[in-house]
Length: 87
Image (cartoon, rainbow, N blue to C red; front, side):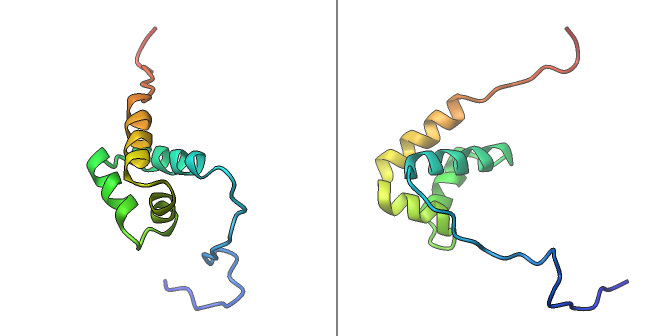
């Protein structure tokens, strides 16, 4: 079954601008999200440098490569592993 197009569809993706402030914190949160999705450190660094990834690239332009590398290193160093098999 194919759903007909509805211009009032509540599930339509609509980008919104969120007021910023702390670009380093924003970069950290975005890096954590990609880490949690299974993206490797090298892949994530490539995403930051890719203009097609607007939020990541904005952080890269504003902070520079050394700061982005530092954020990525910190994010991957702080992985929390939860053991759900037994206590």
